[in-house]
Structure formats: C-alpha cells, structure tokens
Image 1 (cartoon, one colour):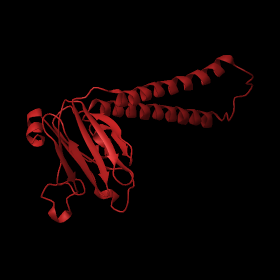
Image 2 (cartoon, one colour; image 1 turned 180 degrees about the horizontal axis):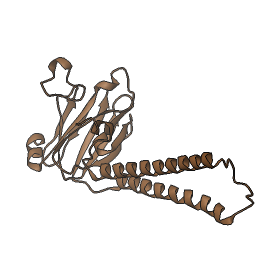
Image 3 (cartoon, helix red, strand yellow; image 1 turned 90 degrees about the vertical axis):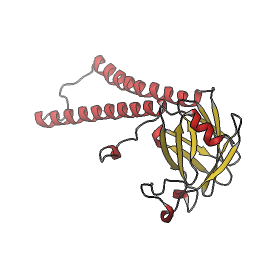
Image 4 (cartoon, rainbow, N blue to C red; image 1 turned 90 degrees about the horizontal axis):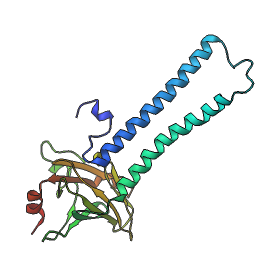
Length: 227
C-alpha cells in the first residue's frame, strides 16, 4: 500500500463498501464546496469593506434561497444514507451462514452447512511466531475461509463482554453482545484476504484479537471446511 493510499479508506471488496466510499467522497466534496463558498464570501466582504449589506429591507427570493438550498443539500445527504442502511441490513437471502462468537480475547467461528460441520478458535499470532512477510497484530493461527461472489450471513454474539466484529475494507461493523444474536451480510467481489479487528473496548487485550478472512472459490471453501 502506498503512502497516499494509507491516508484514505481501504479498497472495497464488496458493493456495500464501494457505496460507502462513494457516499464519503460525495459528503467530503459537498463540505469542501460549502467551506470554499464561505471563504470566498468572507474574502469578498473583506475586500469591499462591506461588513454588512447596507439598505437591506426584505427579499422573499433571498429567504427562499437560504431555506431551499440547505434543505436540498441535506436531502442529498439523507437519501443515500438511508439507502445504504437499508441496503446493508435488508438482504434476507443467503448462500452460507457463519457464526461468530467473541471471547476475551479471541474469536470462535462455526460453519455447519454443505455437508460438513466445523468450529474453531482464532487467536492472534505472537510476534516471536510471526513468519516473514506476516502482518503484526493482524495474522491469526486459524483464518476463516469463505467463498467469494456468494451472499454470506454472519451471526455475531459474545460469550462474555461486549465485542465488535469489524471489517473496514467491507464497510462492515457489528456489535457482539452477550445473550443477543446480531447478523449482517457480507460478500466479496473477488478472491481476497480481508483483515479486521475488534472495535469495542473489551478489556486489557482488546487490541490483540484480530480478524482474518480468506475469500476463495467454492472448491477451495469445501476443501477447507467440509470434513
């Protein structure tokens, strides 16, 4: 990853992430234009020496403008935001189910479809055991293998305290709450390796429970998960 890319959002691996990045870019552009317009107006006032509009009485057009334009800008931000929330939460059809359970301080996974049943724990690899080319604080001993171009329902809960299962490159984050089962849908465009971390302060080792998912083809998924 280049220096400039490290300052921006991660490359998206799914449609929801791509839409979130587009919405972020649009919101930043809109904010920049508003700030630029305010700065230009301030400079014009300073240059002309007109600290206030002299002789101003009333103007219906001006009042309509400064009411309708901000309203339209808020509407242009609200509609895509609501669309994204319903798009992320609204999918009901899925090809596969992955159950995630947060513990202090590791993740447990269960896959029990397509003729096989598999459950395992995923711990972070210590620095002294990290291989050359590995990612410190991100690599785990047991990675989750999932098929790409497939809708996957992720059921998330916790066995002790609050956790949060987050994948930044997919624009996904969901809380793991004891006694409650939350869900979200994920899908990857292409074979990829996705990293994440717990984003809820869950204790002293909060920063040492990473997430690693490998998206492969269905053949690789069945070979890895079906007993």
